[in-house]
Image 1 (tube, rainbow, N blue to C red):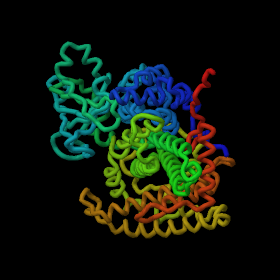
Image 2: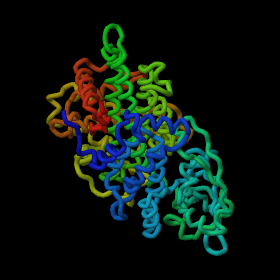
Image 3: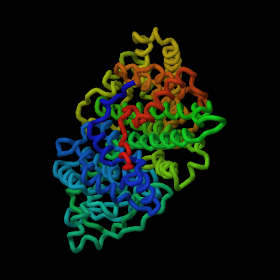
Image 4: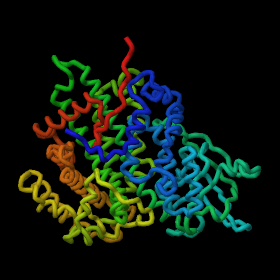
Length: 581
């Protein structure tokens, strides 16, 4: 079958070919070089040089500022080429600058945005300094301060630690307290031009570099810190109105909360490929290990979960363009669920590999690095628990305004993954969805769709989901404000888990329904696998039904044999050059 090639821009294939075959031992950006850099706890220098020549930073800059950031889903697909080989390179060279950049595109004025765009297009870096170790994801507790100065500017004081690229960034976006009083208007975002400070004789004296924190994964990423001592910055360095820092951060980070987990699916793609290759070479009980029923079941289950993760993240990315007012919900869903799917799937692959997942040399050596580097997907940038809290607070209004009201079906383009998208409107992102949930609102219409009578099992599963959504709505409508805070009980957070499961199931069926003819996603076996893998219950779902498993396993092996990715796009991967005889 074909794959959804419309999901991938041509430049994703171009970057893949530039990076070369992962298994080529002579490739300076192949697995051998990646592992050697990881052992030295260094960034892959050859990779950074290649990405600078390619102009990767243009992927983070909107077209009206000279860049290529037209579609969030295309950005994720380009970055998967990096994450599938070296997540440290993906984060350390690019994604960290993206996190800072979206705050500028959201709240920066024309001069600030143009300045940031020039830096990025020149191949320089911008660091994001939001969180503080003492406060974790509680950004409202940030103590780093910006005090008014006699000259009308600000003086920055405090410490920012565990910040990616802070030592080599030309600029920083810093979250600072500008009002000692508590409340949502107590903080501002400040753009610090560190390159200009180094050109000033007085500048560096106000900054002290702090040592890197040692980490288990992402060893090559430069995670350092800075101590600020009354650093002077002009009043014009504030992004947006003073006091709007938390609001801007929460809006802008909806973009990165969506695309960063989407990028990380490339890690599982390679982890699955390493496992398949290893097991095909293992002969047990008279045949390859892949012939064993349990092994085959785990591999197809992981393949299905990879497709589920990419479908959910693709719809989340499209929501940023098509229904930005509801993106606060879908961004948290993507972060919460996609990260879970990836972490659990890699653990299942490690079980299949046995001791080989632990080795730091040999054909499976890259797996242990990928496993370590994947861990931050669950807590980096913002933790899964924080996403749960964000979703819990919105459930009652979603239940009242969407789940009980007909006629709230999402636009079809939201699920037609290869269709064009309108420009990304940063100004239309909202702190709360105000009860808007077009994805869950589309569930009732699925039951009456023309395809439903021909797939009775799928319709029955969706009917059960609709009943559960109705029950969930009734429970959520009973929640009081006291039930929605940080001290909410486990039973209330279970409501979030139920909602995320129902939403992801709806997304997968909608992706199947809207897939083009001949696309693998148009095969109902994929939809059946997605529903089976997301069945409610305290335990892992059992093996896929035999016909479904056969279809997915055949597709998995076909992609492996033809050198294509295991994700939604099924893109060709760079192949090893032929060896001279």
